[in-house]
Length: 405
Image 1 (cartoon, rainbow, N blue to C red):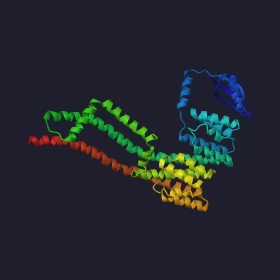
Image 2: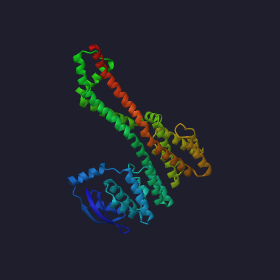
Image 3: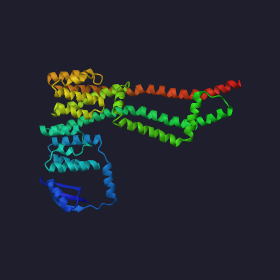
Image 4: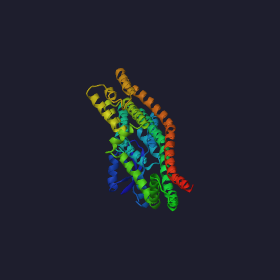
């Protein structure tokens, strides 16, 4: 059963919300365990609308932008002198996301019960990453929670910005290629059969390429719906293969070796590694723990292996830069050199920041130029396809004209 309640905290703040419990007494015990004094408890009428609302709550999500806003606003309010509970209450009133409202209610209750913010964040591993939780915990331990939250916001913003730029650069060719496939299928389905019937009536001998196009045209024309189902099915199959674990090794190997895309992937992983390590070390996280968390941030399995080797090297007392120096096919020379300088001068986090800034700027420049590089390649591909189609369908017409002469 669901109950709406109004309760008072030890500090005198009034809290309202909805909780599920076996009965009123069970809910009252739960509230007291959280350090709240129940003032009123009312059973909720679970009708269709409330069930629909609950379903919407399940499928709602918290975007990266909402996480960025959450960290920046919370950091700002803590710097202004508000208590953590009060700041969370203000954020709860402002949010329009059902899932975020649930998260903020849980965090508020945890703080009222004497728990830390980081322990409350741990209850939502699907929303808050290990990086987020570890930096929050480090900020609590150092007494600089507002600064840690501000750094988390910057880190999330930089990472999201890099991902968005790369996706934006790849959307254009993706849209063009998708349009080419759809237009090609429609041409085969409606144009080729008409020409094929003309060739059949004239009894002209067709070259192999023309016969192949006519076969495809007849198939697409007779099975148009099946053709689009096959195209969508193939796209879904490729997507699931791309995200599957057993294909990750092969896909990651291919990605970092594709011209242009491979250079972009190396810059992205270098920037993410440097930015994440910098943020964690600045927050006071140990270097071994920082490397372990960074392994979760980078997506490519080969970069994860390098970071695993770096962690083992540090644990054995070897220089942190050693693993990066031995993996210059993945991480550029600048990465190992800057880390080595940071180790020698005791300013490792500062050197990592310089690496992150350099490669973030490089990614920005590369994504700007990516569309200008891809455009001529697409034009060549489209031109080759159109040319092959035109030659295959026009050459029989020339043979007919030749026989007439």
